[in-house]
Amino acid sequence: MVVKSPHPDIGIPETNILSFLFGDGLNLPKKELWIDGHDDRKYLSHNSALSWIKRLALGLDRRDVRSGDVVMVVSPNHIFVPVAYLGTVCGGRIFSGANPAFTDDEVCYQMRDTSTRLVLVHPALLSTARKAAVKANIPDSALFLFSDSERASIDGIHDWRSLLAPEKEASLYTWPIYDGPASKSTIAAINYSSGTTGLPKGVMITHYNLIANVSQGVYLREDENGVERWIGVLPLYHAYGQMVLIMSAIKWKAQVYMQQKFDFEDYLGLVQEKRITRLHLAPPLVVLLEKHPSVSKYDLSSVERLGCGAAPLSESTETVVSKKFGTPIGQGWGMTEVTCTGTTCPAGFDDYKGSVGQLVPRSEAKLLDESGKEVQPGEKGELFYRGPNVSPGYWKNEKATGETMLEGGWLKTGDVAIVDEKGWFWIVDRLKACVAYGFQVAPAELEAILLTHPSIADAAVVGLSADFSGQEKVRAYVTIKPQAKGQIREGDIVSWTDSKVAAYKRLTGGVVFVVEVPKSASGKILRKVLREWAKRDASAEGTKARL
Image (cartoon, rainbow, N blue to C red):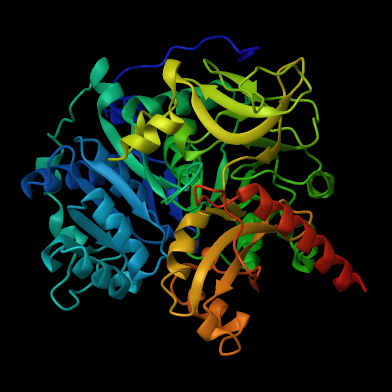
């Protein structure tokens, strides 16, 4: 049974994302849009942001960074990251953001994979980006310091403002329109995803994908008066942050207080001081709101709406936090391959505990069992999704595209869901191999790193359920080479691996030595067996902890 969105079909303009967001660029609001969370004097309005966007776009033109070239941003959140995104994409170039926590090897992988042409890097991350650029054969002349205040050059790396065209000249800049098919074929961003299997892959997002997903969200917005005030804590290198804090913020005319570095006490202080009206959350943050003792010290009464995405949230945590704030948590389901959001709880929804809501407008889904047969309402099946927000595929990876983006426009999600008769969805499991630990972790990436250790013969990585938050710890089952037995400990491998990856990819679930990694006759790791091992171990370790 194909489930269709219960909402009416909506019109989706086929144009440049800049035309959709800013129209003709005239008579734009001059009220604060993106604001520094700790200095209200630093802000951009719609009007001033567009001026900066045009200056960057024209500057990139003059530097011969052409349509189809990739501009990478390596930076924490600040008020100019949206400028970098939109100034890059408006002229046909492609934005790709790197996690600020990445090691130089991880940044280098993304630089090489995207053939990055120019890099905007925060001064605090220059050392990492420079090492990565050397490995990727990107010259220093392609790197620019990128922060919210002008910086003196560092070892010949100049401030990004040196790229910008003069304001008067940029005021005459016009972006290409991308009417019709061009909107659907012009790539705006390459956002990295663990996908359903294998190494992280670059997901291509078109101008039309962005416009579709913003339009779907705007349609479902509550009919509210007054100013929306948000905290810009969602990372802007990630699809969730880009959709909410850049695209939706512009269309909703919200005020976004940017938080460069997450600190929970600081976050609570911003909610209280700025009278934040809506919280955009991920499960780890919801757990903090549930359990952290400091929550009771702050006045959070201004919060009217709670939304949670990125991973399923446990029903118990949802119940506690909803009660604290006096409003239900509107959960949603999405993935990078659907631009951001595929299902969400519409305005005025009933309190469907644990549900990720209904399909957004102009989308449909079906659930299939292991034999490929469609299941009935209330039965579990793998979620297949179709809509105008689905990516055209993975960057320079036809094999992965063919395995995930199927005939008829269907996206194979790797998530296992249940849908009821009213079209409400629950995510109950996943077939894809990724581990959910704040952000998704691709086991194949960690396995490849582990296999470079001189004492390791084989390795497999899986998620270990940590608690009832819906999050997992990252565990490795490792086979040691015969000559290394008795010479190396599990903790040694944990420390060695953690030094090579971003914090969220670390082996928080530890290492367990095994005689052999479970594999099929063809040599593929048996992920189902690994999940059974992890479930067994989590239960045993939980019992031991309680004792």
